[in-house]
Amino acid sequence: MEVASLEDSTTVFYLPHQVVKKVKNGRTKWRIVFDTSSHESSAPSLNEALEMGPNLLPEILAILLRFRLHPCDVTQAFLQLVLDKEDRDLTRFFWYRTTPESDGFYRNTDEVIAYRFTRLPFGLTCSIFLLAATLREHTERHKATFTTPAPLIDKNTFMDDFAAGMEDENGVIKFYYELSSMMKLINLPLAKWATNSEQLKAIWKAEGQSVEAQTQVLGVSWNTEAECLYIDADELTKKLKDGPTTKRKLLQTTASFYNPLELYFPVSLLSKILFQDTWCRGIIWDKLLPTDLGTRWHTWVSGLSSLLQVHVPRWLATSME
Picture: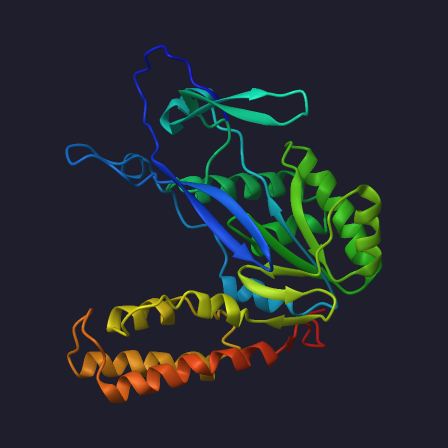
């Protein structure tokens, strides 16, 4: 981000934003979410003024299935693309002026000024297409030089997440270096790597990179040491807000049960059947559920903690090769 000039521009849009707090595994993370779909009653939003572009993303299920076919796997997330200077004033926002301190940290002052993005922010309706198109063009240009990573980037990248695997540790280490070299050609560094390869973990530690045993692959929890996939039942139950049990609350919980591989389908199916029953009875959104439905709902919720004991092997002990 950079300080925006006070000079008038013909195309300016100020992004509303709010802070989001996420507590997971005993750690608290804060991030700022920009609302590119907000607008005044008499004007369109920024997203409405942008062209979305075609969908170039592969299916999440296909990526996750391929992710389970190799003994050694590696995942990482791409950083974002540089935003053209002519378009940066469309991503302005207000924030406090910051000043560097002697300890190396920055401090906020009381002065509010305008900033703007220098990199493409996720949230724009065109962000997904621009990133996918850039990666596709880059891999097409260098597929003859980087024969291993180039074909995998196009079919194994969803949004800014990438997952791929090799048949042995030597293969995954070689892949790591080739992919890193390939992405350096367009100054698109890689971040947030994870792997089940002990040799590659040792390399990262020597390079000063952080290595975490528990991570996520396209939203699916993965323990790289135990080599298993699991669901964070505690995270799911935390989303059950206190308050009356209504049809709306039932839908919110059911929708938050993220299960793309359908590993926990017998559990998620029960909540879907229960939600279907509310429609069949004509229950309105914010009305308390009848006693029998409420009892079934609380029984389902109380059983979610048992999912902590269910760990599914990540590798299917088979390969496409």
